[in-house]
Length: 194
Image 1 (tube, rainbow, N blue to C red):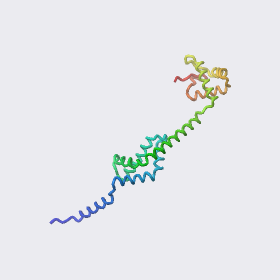
Image 2 (cartoon, rainbow, N blue to C red):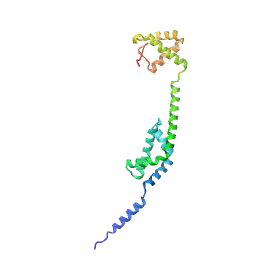
Image 3 (cartoon, helix red, strand yellow):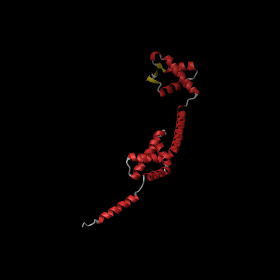
Image 4 (spheres, one colour):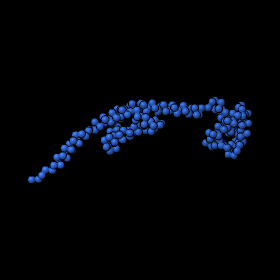
């Protein structure tokens, strides 16, 4: 008669305990992940926006999904494909809230960007008029792409547009900084093609 292995019954008991303790269903795991998403909502949203400063909705949602997927993989030791399904199911109740908050952030970013650009690129009507006059004057003076002397250009601007020499010089400098004209040799300018 074969002796029963005294360790075999202990292994069966240990396996039963492990299975009993880990009898987590996918539904239970998804509910746990939903609770985690809910408790970390602000952190997840901020992280997605930091990763995508333009607050592009699809890029931010991909980042959120990736963060929740990594959490699922770490918690439950899942393969990426399975964890992605868990993440999608966990985020789904919060999708509309994420969408609303991300769109609001994108609108705020766009408004902020426009305001910053407005401050950087704002020109007074006088600056705009002197700039246009400088371009028109340069086009007249530079026949067939010839070089235009700065002194001649300033004189022509003063006579045609009724601005002083200082404003004419400032307009020429502004055009040079913007890359519309360049100083091919000291005191002589040429318009860039384009």
